[in-house]
Length: 328
Figure 1 (cartoon, rainbow, N blue to C red):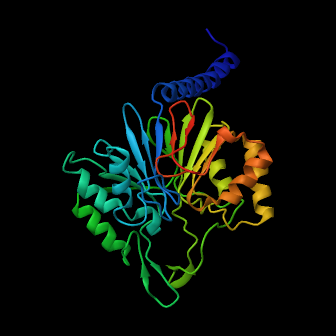
Figure 2 (cartoon, rainbow, N blue to C red; figure 1 turned 90 degrees about the horizontal axis):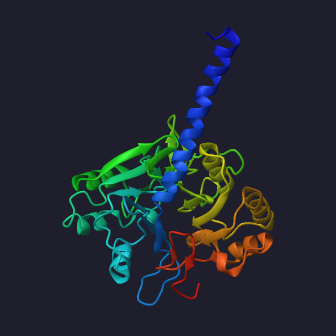
Figure 3 (cartoon, rainbow, N blue to C red; figure 1 turned 30 degrees about the vertical axis):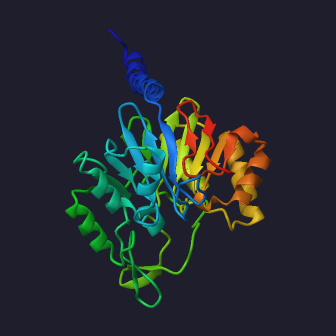
């Protein structure tokens, strides 16, 4: 028989063993189900694609694929996937990083086009809590997702097409090794983005800090690959949420991080944090800013092979190698 002390040690050891087992399983899943990441919308185009102020990328896996954001103009991503030969008919899950129109504009057209081939195509859409809050300008003009002035109208039009919205409130795994942060606590950066919109809080017009901003973390064997649409919640804040899910390096960042107008102080602080976090690969497109990305890459000493400014058709392969598609 066990004495009380031995029994206590055994009881404490079991949860630790379970956690270790789950951690090993998660790493095995990442190895077994790697994703190829292709940029579908951003500011720089390849030959034949459409570039614009927006972002979209698709994570293509053997068992499951996920579309991250849908571009600005309603037909930009559709044009680019047809141009690139990327078939979204088998992609059933979509992540919208936040409500801004340059990330939500293509959803309805893409659903209309690909649902004919697969009724479930692009039918499950993940948004963070607060996504459907109605935004207003200082003069009271409504601003909603996509080209809509009303968030409710956008939602109704999407649901008419068979789209089901899932509202995320906390970190959630939506596919093997793919984690959504949900709303990101503003611990270090308070807000990183444009001003001029308001939401109603307790009957009062309050500046909108885009609390629905969320990012997608891909847990690779080398660490986290963090994808943001604009990073309005702050790159550091977002990275820390991922490291709370699993304490692993932030090996790579992909997408928009709204650093194009950042001060030297902000860029230096961001670079210092990324260096400590273990960044080795960077594909900063959209609102990251080329000069800002080059500043960070230079401070970290990243080789040219490990930095991309992203263009339509730029790829991160399953073994995390950059394939360039344009002058980026």
